[in-house]
Length: 147
Length: 147
DNA sequence: CTAATGCCTCAACTTAAGTTGAGGTCAAGG
DNA sequence: CCTTGACCTCAACTTAAGTTGAGGCATTAG
Image (cartoon, rainbow over all chains, first blue to last red; front, side, top):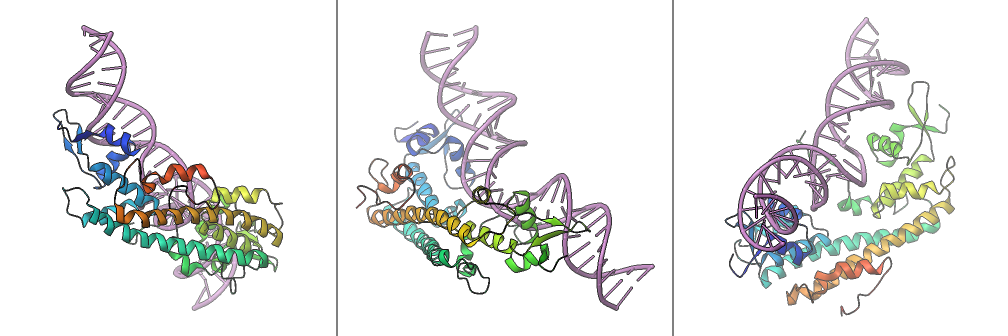
């Protein structure tokens, strides 16, 4: 293995991401690897930055699918550059801002409603916050046309 | 069925929650029902408030398990009172504040790091945000050394 | 009488992001 | 020579919050 290349164990150690998760990211197309003679994965050091970026994006609420989508617009087979990072993080920061704004308005409504206790379907902003909070909706949803 | 009692379809209609979700909440112990002669679920009107509260808590990031836990401290078999709501929402609002604080500091770090692009495992606040935030516990905190 | 609703139960399926385990290879160390 | 450790593959399992479907009552409309 060339000096500048590292094993999956080293990537795991440096990034704090489990080997099984790195396998998983590879299956999802988020990272790529070469193979050694013994069929072991071999990575360029730049994969550490890539994995680091993945984790930061996840913290910001970006799904792996979205991260993969963002990565797909980058020239692959070269490390993620500072300029790439500016573009990625700028886009993700906007999503993060939006999430913060949603939660903040929910918090404010909650503050307003704690005293009133109405929880009226017609009047309560908290109850009707749905439109504004729609983006947050969690839960299992079958994709239309998937069944 | 007594005047003040309603069917599961009415609960679903009033709250916007699917019948299947109401079944699910019942299995999880979040709501309870009586049965009619035809073995249909029959609810007191107060279940609407209960379900409304469940949805608000979920929006605030509270899991169903945590909601069930909170409900378990309430006298059951009587509607959730205004005073109960104050207690519940106050507790949940704190968790919400904490989530907002986490996302906000992440956003700030992201803003700081967009220009630098270091993503260094040793130095970058963004990369290390996890450990520091985890140690802080709930509540709003300014990260030391993040300015 | 028959069809359409509305409801019932129970089991299986969905998504996301991984983890866990079984079974196998390969190189180094004692 | 044998074991340990790091790695490999592939399949199955995990959690959360439901959804979907099959098969079956009961009430109501036509």
